[in-house]
Length: 456
Image (cartoon, rainbow, N blue to C red; front, top):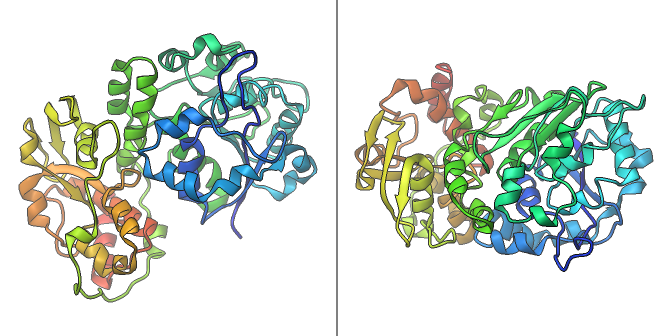
């Protein structure tokens, strides 16, 4: 039976006393939904029920994010027909976890909402994970245990930081700052990524011993929900373990240098950067490999790279290739058209470092031809385009061009990275992509992946 999770959205559509719309933040629901909706039964609620207001600014900011755009166009019923939160007070036993989507709205309603506070207390008392991302963790500030102790006493937490609020130019509109409020709770330790906008997911315990998962910002949304919704008693150990500071440092460097709302707008281009390199630290994903369908490779007939439109626009004058070059490089400088003009790139396949982007290719970890022969021939053009430009999963990587061309369209049974130390990471990336897209593998391919995972 699939885990059941109660997802809570704000009902606050306006900042009180201000001519400023608010609500829940689009990517903080869209990205978790994309990853989990086929694996987890999600029930959506809000304090008032009915339509939960979507922050209109997040629609504009993430208009070039394909996951958010798809969610916006196809899943409107999720937030336009929410259940009333109070209906679930007697039904906590039906659910395995609760998750609060962020946005500024929760600071004005859910922060104070007695029903929400009672639900959080009930979930925690039952030993069920309580989780929230970005401004969402504000819901825990006033929460208490049944004995009256602050729920966050002696917990380690994160949330949208004061610096990020300043860079978004919204501090003056806020009645309080979440970071400040959490720091007032006795024994509560507030932590954050090394740089603003970097991914940060923290797993801790509430004062009564329940699992507490908090995420810092939009880049942390998928990590927060994966950890919250697939905890040990569902599918095994949490993906990121305790107090995970994700590889959002390159993202953070760029956003820290940005000014005002521009910083927040740039998140849409890089929201997935923090997910890519986690595979170097994950436990070997043997259950996912075992779940892949083994079948003979399909025909190459009809294949053409143009059937996988790639290097599409990702907004802000950047295409997918340029986003990956910026993400995978260090100290990357770009011109007005987003083309990198300088930087340093390390190729993990062969261990070489380059300072000229012309020495690099962007590798499709699972080659387009391989995907065609293992299921993508039946996809729509839109599906193939999403695959060829996937910034969410470990499918795109900047590597030495000659090594990429040597790899060509080969699978791991015929080609492996020259650096044997990268076998483990490469195998996990390959398995992840094949799993997400429900692509088949051959018996030889599976055998090679098993051998590579043995090096982990």
